[in-house]
Image (cartoon, rainbow, N blue to C red; front, side, top):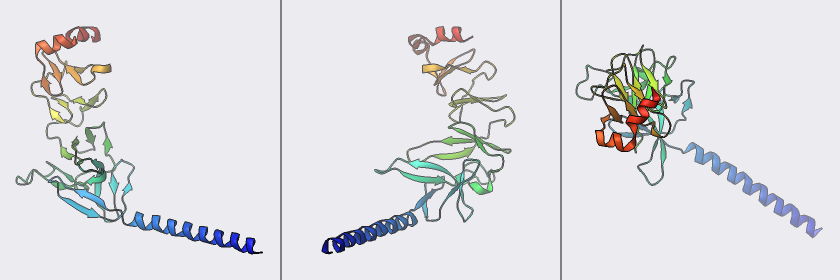
Length: 219
């Protein structure tokens, strides 16, 4: 009899501890603070839950739309939401055309066209990843209808310009501009130059890497 009472006592304690653990988990979940970062790096906190939209962006119950990124500038990385866009309001010359994302992006047509470029029916957007999460801006140079991503998404071009990670490549010839593939995917070329990122490479660097020979093979 005493043995049976002891077993029931142990069982009761176990159930109680499981209940306490479950409640602690729920409490911790409610206390999660999501950090909203505008383009000035100003951080605000929001305890409401964000929900992922079909387009890949996130929205909370207050209607705030953001792009989910990771802040790696701290000892413990944390999820952040970028909620503002540069160059969206060209009348604002003091703040870099800064606007809230939910006033700019058309979520019905929005899509992520690679790691550095987004688009909707109105704009091409550049994403600039940084240690604190990054920034998003409207591309003032890109032509929406002819814009296309090249290869793995580092480079892009349209009928007028060429781009690398959202930056305009000055002087690049868009008609002959192309990329290397395989291990040298981060290099590109046109009829005049070779490019490492958005920089023109020297002839010495091109020769050392064998890019001139490789270009002949890709034609």
